[in-house]
Image (cartoon, rainbow, N blue to C red):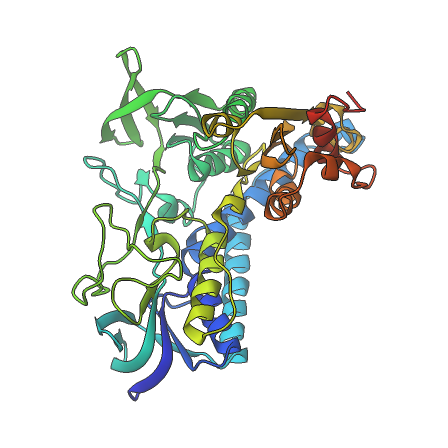
Length: 467
């Protein structure tokens, strides 16, 4: 490929990179996007959000069919065709990747395949199969994402010890699975494999599962997992990990110092993600990288080097696809000199697509109290929801955290059916500085799960009707 001249080169085609590329092109910039993978879409589309949610939906269907007798529907001898489940996941990923490719063509964004490297301000080289392409550019956007974080002393062999990357390429369902880490990634895979038929144990170093969520939500979540037959070991440290002829043997230590051994066919290491900057040449180009491996930026996502910008998992904000997309749009608008506004991180939705689902936005009850607010809480359980009863999904609740003086909503926390969809209303409430009175006065259709939000808002004032 001949050398190129562009207004913007985006390195990485994930939900930060390709969204930033599209927004920049919409604003009239001449854009190229560099991707080392053979398909566009980045970790989220190829090895994260999309494939995991495809597997979760398959697990949902299995569960519904096994419990269909409650609805007067007989579905005997329900079995899991694991290769078929994985094949469907692959089809969805391929179609989604093709969709990103279409967006690039539609917006006249040039795709350059290969490993991108920043040679200095205004210069990116791309080493591909056909040789090296040099791109001269006014702006460079680092959108290279993240990779699964490794643990010293634990050898990921891709067979018995895996990360979220390798587990998405399995050909056979493991008979048993130990999950190390009870954050969103860990519990989502635990939820998938337990329902597909694996015996699952989850080990978490911290005192509670989903530790970033509201404490009441974490407590309810662990109770739900135990009810599903998943062994839950919070406050437990992982020690020695050995591979055996049949899988893995793990030594774990409880908070009291008691040691025990766990054996399973496979160990999934799900202890977070690390920024991916390998081979990028960012440090050599003068870009500052902090002690944790993140790239510091200003509120426009500029790095310390003029003309080099960074967004998504490589900067010290929440490592979520929707955060990367929002940051990329703001960065592109700054580059183009367009009107923009900063990302409001207080409205970042946190979503866990397990069974049960968990979603939240804003401050937890503890965080609100620690911040000095005079806190008032409203809760409504799905057990009192007509629609939840229809769905046979009555676990969990909606919890609204507000402050007494102005009645402003500070945070919303949901555990239960369709939590990840319901949280959007809560995000809008925070964005518009809504009061619980305003939510309570907004008619919600009946019967819907969203009525739980309405009732929780009434509950702040002690006026919940249906409980």
